[in-house]
Image (tube, rainbow, N blue to C red; front, top):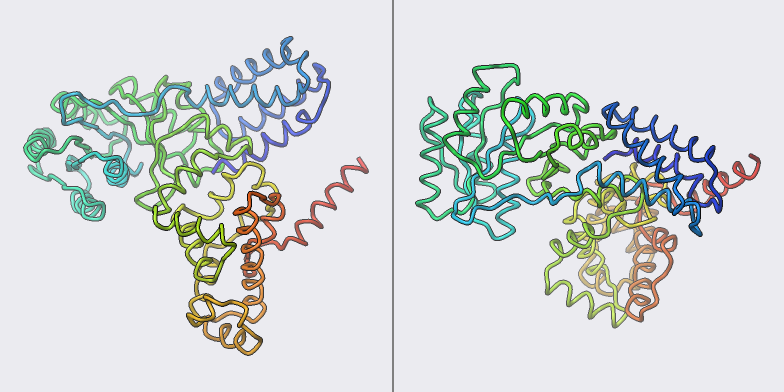
Length: 467
């Protein structure tokens, strides 16, 4: 997500971070690189121009020049301006004091409205709400069937009534939701071309009938600047309260996310970061700005960990940490918890400073995690509980049983030893440095080895010294 933009912005600001003194030439050079990075990311030209002007003005101010670390102050300014650009206002939805709260989803054909409706229903269910889905997309064949399937998957009722009249379908759906005691109603409307007058009028009629508490425009982040043009057109004809960005995980540039709020004045409320139904989350501008600048996202990492780890698992893990125990059963449980937190690349990049240390992180194959599971499950219960009994002959048997090589089994056994040391140190309050932690992570042949990373780092240092 935003990988291309993130790399270029970090490169542009890299020379400033360690400087003790900043002159106008150094700032101008960095701002040219920032401007180019944003334009290549398909950010609206007017937005880029204003953003760079604000950063430049603040960077040349007295507060920065008198700072002990002016380079870091400039990075801080860029972070604050990025946060403002993405939308510093609260991203939460408004909830009606007299239920049900009604949420109307609008957008173009193919923007992902129906899937977003199912994801939003699941998200609100996890937060203690009792949502219902109303099928008001009567234009697309099988749209109602798709919504019903999504409702079944997330455990939410779907109200599908009159197939010929979306206004009546919405009216009946809201009344049924109220009668059933549902406190949130999500309306899945038909996708439309924003130039289609008949469909826009239909949407306006649905809005008048529903009197929604929130109108959310669903935009495909992958379409970049075109998504912003769509948002402008909808704003002029059918106003909305906020944006849901879909496919944000596949957006390497970030043009839509960085432009839509500045151009329309409407904040991004939610963002979809994957295909799974639990991949929709509230949008946090400050956290996104931190991730773009390579600062990690600790708060989201903590929230994901809390959601992924059950209380009894947490207590048992803490108990074993204090005792310095870490068997292959514990290893397998930890991997399962990690996988519940989302794709490995995304999770590790949330750790401040770790993403750059793990070169080739984008090459980590999720299938390697399945291979780790296969190796551990090929062990006997006794071998998992007492790892030191695994001798050469047992390693050959485990490799054959899991479709792995003996070398891969050896890597995993060594990784468990490193993890056990880490757990023991954590239990005693002595945590190792991040590079050591990275070295303990098993790649099973799917990523760079620590020695390779150190060699690459050494080469970079030599090149820099020559310059």
